[in-house]
Length: 376
Ligand code: NAD
Image 1 (cartoon, helix red, strand yellow):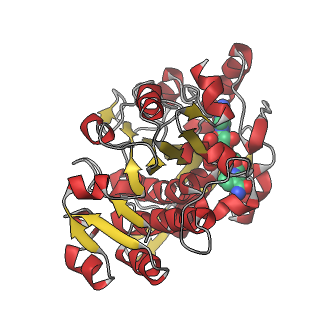
Image 2 (cartoon, rainbow, N blue to C red):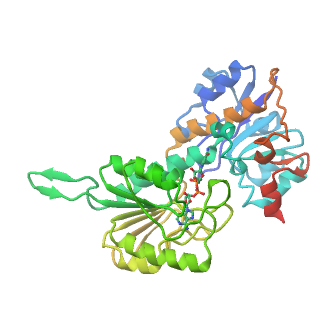
Image 3 (cartoon, rainbow, N blue to C red):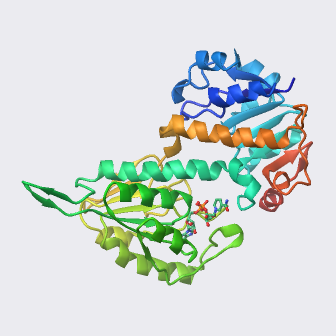
C-alpha cells in the first residue's frame, strides 16, 4: 500500500505535519503511515499516540527512504533532501519562491515537490489545503496575545472600586487572514480596535468584527486578491498618513505582506518617535529582509528611547504547536485525498488547476508558473 511519512522538524520548530488524528484517518483509508521517532513530541503528540492511531514509529532514514509521500512543515535540511529521490513526493512549506537553491536541488533529484506557498488560494477546492491561511490565522491570534502580554496596561475598560481604567487602543495594519484574527482577538480582550489595509475590499471584513476601518488614501489591489507593491511616492504618502493613525494608538500589530517581495515599511522611524510611551509594536512581517516596523528584528524585542517596545514576531504558529499542527495536518490530508485515486495510489494530475500551481517540480521539470517566473 501507499506509504505516507512525516519527519521530526529542526530544533526551532515545534509543529509536526501529521498528527495522530490524521494518521488514524489515513490508516483507515489503507495508507501505511510512518512517523519519525519523536516527531510530534513538541506539539504534545507522543510516539505512543501515533502507534495507537495505527502508524509505525521509525528512524529518520526509514521515514525518508520508504515513503511515497513525505509531509513536512519546513524544507528539510540538505542531508535529508539529498536522500529523497525520483518518484517520491515531498510536501510542506518548502519556501519555493524564496529558497530557490533548495527547490532546484529537489528538481535535479527529480523529486515531486509540492510547496504550500504556491497554492492558488482563491480556487475554492484549494481552501481545505490552505496552510498559509490556517497558520496565519494562528499567528494573528497569538500576535494579539503577545501584544497584550507586553503592554503595561489593561486592554479592556475596567471599572473598579480603585478607579476606572480606559480601554487600550489597538491598530492592526494589514487586514488579511492574520490581521483579521488579531483584530478579533484584541476585540475579545476588550480593546478598542481599528484596522487598515490598502485593499478597500477588506473594509467589510474589518467592520464585521466590530472594528473601525481606517481608510487608506492609497488603493493597491493586486492579482489573486493580494495587495500590489506601492510606488515610492505612494509609500511616502502612506507612511505620512500612518504616522497620524499610529500616535493615537497604544498597540500596533502589523501583518502586511506582498507575495515574493520585501515587506512594506508601514511604521517609519518618525512614527516610532511620535508614539505614546509604553506603546507596543508587534511586527508579524519581521524578517531578515526587514519588516513593517522600522528597526524590528525577527524573534527579538527592541526597546526604543521613548519606551516603546518593538517585537519582531518569530514563528508564532510554532508557539501554538498543537493547534497549528492539527490544522496543518488537515491541510496535508486534504491534498492527499485530492491526489489519491480510488485504490489509494498517488497520481498527481499536472493539468489540474490546483496541482499545476501547487507542484513546484516534478520529474526534473519546474511545473509552477510562479516559480518559473521567480527563477528567471
Ligand atoms: P498577505 O499575508 O499577503 O498580506 C497581509 C495583508 O497585508 C493583506 O491584507 C494585504 O492587502 C496587506 N498589505 C499589503 N501591503 C500593504 C500596505 N502597503 N499597506 C497596508 N496593507 C498592506 O495576505 P493574506 O492574509 O494571505 O490574504 C490576502 C488576500 O487573500 C485577502 O484578500 C484574503 O481574503 C485573500 N484570501 C483568499 C482566500 C480564498 O479565497 N480562499 C484564501 C486566503 C486569502
